[in-house]
Length: 191
Image (cartoon, rainbow, N blue to C red; front, side, top):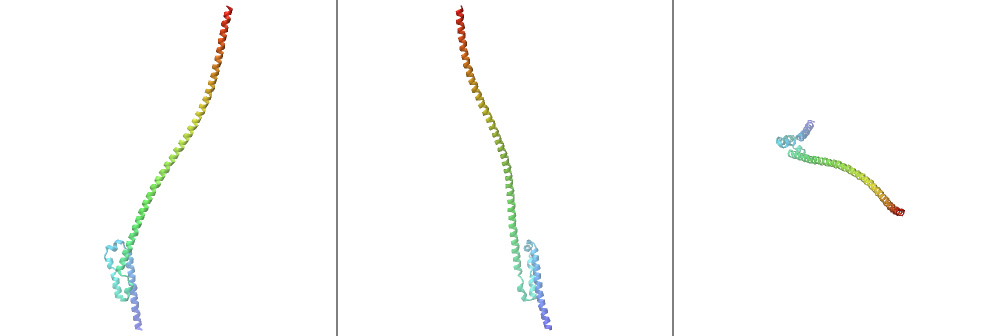
């Protein structure tokens, strides 16, 4: 009975040692993960801080060392994690820079587009004004052409009337001459 109690005590002690060593390891890894990237590389003590784990595990029993992670391996994994974090931050930084440049370029293009639209609207207004002026001038020219055509008609009628008046004058002049001649002949006969 005493032998069974001793064995169970040894078993629980070794199990408790394993449990405590693994929980210490987890706490140590969490502390390393929470530390900044520079602390891992600038402090050599962080590498040696994992040595008590191996010492405790060796004191607890040689059978428990297979379940523990090598401190160098865990540090390498942490370095890899921080390297990946740096790479991700670098990619994010380049992405944000590219996004910023794209936004600036888009803002410039939008500004140019707005200016082009304003200029286009002004040109369209000028075009409409010129079309209106051209239409107005066409109307004025048509009126002038109608007035000129009317003037030509009136002038032609007046020329015809003038020709008639000239013809009548010549006829009357001829009659006057005939009357003068007949008067002269009568005067001669009277004498």
